[in-house]
Image (cartoon, rainbow, N blue to C red; front, side, top):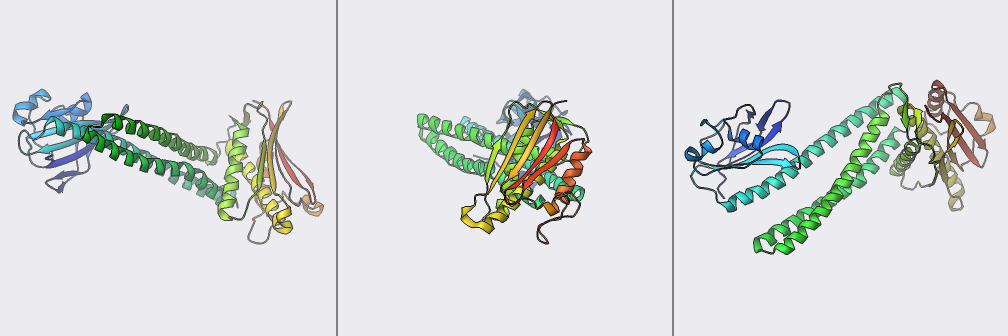
Length: 402
């Protein structure tokens, strides 16, 4: 197939134009250029606006089917045979793809079908690339948000939280990568079968690829939801209470905290129990603030049960429990561990700034202090019940509704 000129144009909605960042003519790149969509005497514009193929095998004889005036090429030499195909993915407008030749009658129906298949795959590839770009931007924003969190609250557990996020995102991304590789193989097989005329086999292969694509979409949305969730709950507080699913909030932080510690120390493990009162619909809280409190109150139990496990060995099973309960107009969120408990002689100091029982370098002494201040500032309550040698139970008391 003669493709002396080959290019892909990308739709720029802000500038209302089609941008051609890379055009190859006779094996050499041409300078980038763009075509305004207001210019109706451009074949690329006609193709994009009408969402129809432009097929010309003799420019002087055929151009009038699409445009009223002949125009010189924006970049490169004049061509006689020109094919423009629209690039769309479902209902999303992406741009155009074009192959051109300097001689007349360069393209047959066979060539057009080849280019149509290429246009389909190109549209999907470009959409995936754009989705990856958006995900990268979200991850960059997440990193910037985490940097602000360090300054605002000095959370000693930020490293564990980040590792937990990475773990949560890595699982769906692994699925996306694996199914994408399988789909590439399936599409190659399908192309071979189509060439050989094995239509039924090609259809079966296409069905497998569609099934895989659905799985890619599912896991891609899961990764996107995790990032958006973290952005929502780690941005600077607006100071405005919102109706939040407290069960989902606590469950998400429990898993992130656990995977964060596992990423830091592969030998760490603990049994996690949850007991959520599903009669609780939403709770009016500032999610960014209460989220930080929950994270601190979950990280500490994981630390203390790990310490006890190292002291007592295999006979001890470390357990951290998170439960919610609605009683009247209050919601109780409790985080309990079976660690060594808090000695009575230090119990009154645990909410003081910079007080910590952890070894030097393993704690700032700010976690519980910040948590206590946040809860009190919101007019809510944080209490602790502890028994030496048996464990501790921290409870946040929240309003049941707005």
